[in-house]
Image 1 (cartoon, rainbow, N blue to C red):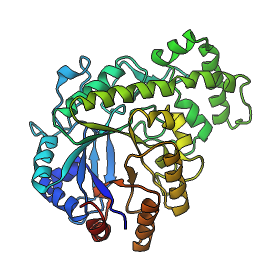
Image 2 (cartoon, rainbow, N blue to C red):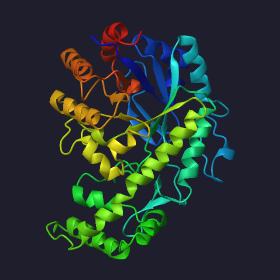
Image 3 (cartoon, one colour):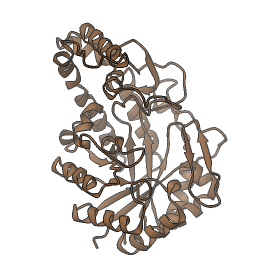
Amino acid sequence: MKRLRATLFIQPGDLLAEGAMSVMAAARTVGAAAVALATPYHAYRDVLRHPGRIRIEQSPGGAAHVPDPHLYPRGESPSRLPGLGSRDLLSEAGTAAGEAGLSLDVWAVFLHDDRGGQRAGAVVNAFGEAYPDLRCPAGTGTLAYVVGLVEDLCRYRPGRIFAEGLHWYPLAHGHHHERLEWIPPRAADLLALCFCDGCRLPAEAAGVDVDTLRQQVRDAVDAELGGCGDRQPPRLVELLGPYLSRRSEVVELLATQCTQRALTHGVELVFVDLAAGMSGWVDGRSTGPLGVRRARDLGIDIAKLSRRTRVAPAVYASSSARFRRELSAYRRHGVDGPVIIRPGAPDVTSPEGWARRLEDLTESGIEEIGLYQYRFLTAAELQRLGETLGTAGPG
């Protein structure tokens, strides 16, 4: 079997509950060559699957490292995770990883920040309603913020920065305790569109009738939510294409600037593409367009972006056939970065399923994987990884 290099994704709560050296020992046992610590990260409520751990862990989100406020626009440095005091978990993880013979990577969420309150640069929908937890890629101060975050994290000399959320977001996963399941997909897509000044003004300068587009989007959302989704505003598609065309250029600019800034410090930035994992997130039953197509809704042009930076697609699918189709499409678009997978439920639920997943990866020419994530894996799943990656994995 082809040797796979694996990175185990971990949370600050894992280090606090088990101790850094214990987590690093577990990473070694499963055959990982590196760990990627989440910092900064958004709010969450997780059900943990490890024996001996609490079952529900809640976090308001924040940074596990100690941000340098001088590297960010004024007042925009990431908020710290509560309860850490003066502790710097990223520094502690780096020391422990080095002692365990592991590389330390960082898993950073860039444009999703749950600190609350209004801020410049937030996403603004067609109704003029801001999403304060989501920073618009084209928004005021966004470029300075993301470059500052890269500079900040590079102070810790990680091997790689896995950059999550360096693009526009869908409507879902933009705030905690959402109630979106009943919303028609078309309405959700339109409500995710941003009309902040950073998006609107360049489009108007390029000749797009943005005022008419906003009204058309509002009319379409009202129709969808009112049960009249068959009533399509007459100019929506005509105006939407030109308006969206610039988004991939913005994401490419952010990714390129961040990649180049990381390289000046000898750090590799890996752009995490969540598109393929979106439809299969809840239960692994991934359907609809493949990730390379779905990525366009997030402002990601995979073929162009993969020429500027390394891309790591997150592929969450229980079906082997769907998983292979996703991998094949990304490879055709020039993607050669690590593939982020869930080696346990709901995507993989048996030893036979894991054997098939390894076969899918190796036969698709994949050389690196990201394991999402430590806290969601049972003792049996961790043992299974150790019996396979520990012998067929990284040397």
